[in-house]
Amino acid sequence: MPDSSPPRDKQREKQENWALIKRLVLDYGVERWPRYAVAFSLMAVAAGCTALCAYLMGTVVNEAYVNKSFAGIVSLGLLTMAIFAVKGLATYGQAVIMSRIGNSIIAENQRRMFESLMRQNLGFFAERHSSEFLARLSAGANSATQVLKLLITGIGRDLLSLIGLVAVMVIQDPVMSLFTFVIAPPAFFMLRKLIRRVRVIAKVQFTGGTRLFETMHEAIQGIRIVKTFTLEDEMRERLNANVTAVELEANKMARVSNRSSPLMESLGGIAIAAGVVYGGWRTIEGGATPGEFFSFITAFLLAYEPAKRLARLQIDLNAALIGVRILFDIIDAPASEPDDRNRPALSVTDGKVEFAKVNFAYRPEEPVLRGLSFVAEPGKMTALVGPSGGGKSTILNLILRLYEVNSGTIAIDGQDIAGVSLQSLRRSIGYVGQDVFLFRATIRENIAFGRPGATEEEIVAAAKAAYAHDFIMSFPDGYDTQVGEHGMSVSGGQRQRIAIARALIKDAHLVLLDEATAALDSESERLVQEAIAHLTQGRTTIVIAHRIHTVAHADRIYVIENGSVAESGRHEDLLRKGGRYASFYRLQLQGEELREAIVAAE
Image 1: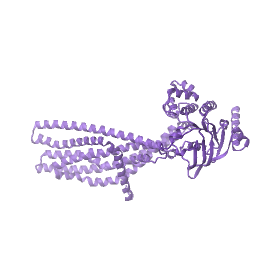
Image 2: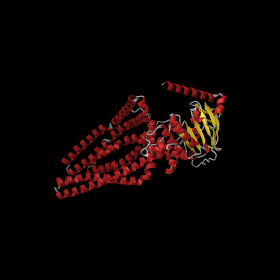
Image 3: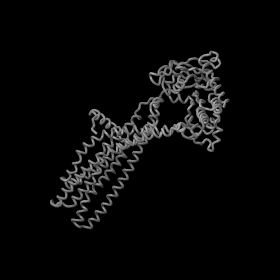
Image 4: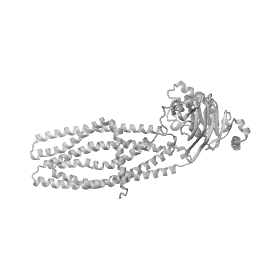
């Protein structure tokens, strides 16, 4: 396939590749240079042993067929054994060292990528599928190691071996050595044509692999929906399509990357045939010793494999550099949540939360909050109600600074939260949402995540206050019960109470509740409400609820509509006004009466 890309693009890609290699050497190679130096030295020893064996083959032949010296043959045999033993030890040593270096680089990249992800806000993750990060981590971390390994082994093993063997060929017959170089020009021309093709295929392979991760990840995470809606066949079709696409690209890569083999083998055959004919003629007609001829052919054959690997080096490097670039895209991503630990810590005394003319939009053309202003009084419960999409959950996200406001201020006890450190802000807030996330760990560990280092007594006390202790102790393993991925081994109400215990043990000044009882049955809701009562006692609480009866006792209710406050007051006052709140209340009563009628009819 002809390469029609502009020369400027080729030049830019070449410069980018060299920049990546330089960065890899500086970032990972320099600090590991002592170990690389030892590995390189061992490779040099192995290369020297290979060249020495080729040279000795000529002496062996001469001792056997010219000098007919059995003692000489025995001596050379013992020397050959020693050489191969040294080569084996050197090869083993460099392989172990290179593997350890590679493992340390992979580990460092895994840490660096995770650290970079932890510096991003929610907006960064909202634009990407979670499986993309797994694909980048898997491909990129290994590619960085592979590039450095290719460079070291290409120079230390293959190039040194080739130099040593060529030296043997030149020593034995300088003229015949010229036949070994007929491969280079056509091979170089062929490889230039393949490099860009390999780079394109490698990019497509990564994209296809990411889609494969996505399909499998979503099918597993959404297995309940898959089973409920009998989507098994649809998921199989999606997975099969992605697997087929990846397989096709892998096959294409196999064809393209190995396309140089027929040419290299043919050229190698021509060079060997020419060397054999010339060497045979020189031995028969020119009086050269058979040892020189045999040593030359041995060196040539041994040099063929490292020469082929060096010829493929640029192809392999370009393929591996795609993975390196993919990794660095994440590592180099500017922190959307910068480290601000040098900022003053939030000092919460009363816990008053105030929004002043706050504007916010997830996308510039779609404003969510429009000049929103309200006050959550200290030590009291403030409820946010209103239609879906009005901006209620966004308000909690902004208090936690999961996103930053576009304009306006959010203050806690008179301190603009944009000017305090994120850690101090979030440590002052307890949060329980509708979709509770539990880590794949024990119940004890999930509760203790609220305050690392908490004692067993504190964990049990928090569980009791959250009305979770009794059901926890009903499990055979008690607090050591594994909750499974996303807490799927426990019920929805149990997950909520574990999350409330996690918030309780944090002992935060402010509490944010986002539809904490919306997905629960009546019995679970009652227990969770009692747990919430313990959690919110004496704390400034902002709660979002669609079920108005759950916030009827709130000290102040704000109706949020179209990103601003439509009305506010206490439950009874808002009902007397007959406005939007009263309308929501009537609609919910009608809905509940309809559900009760349906239940009675059944």
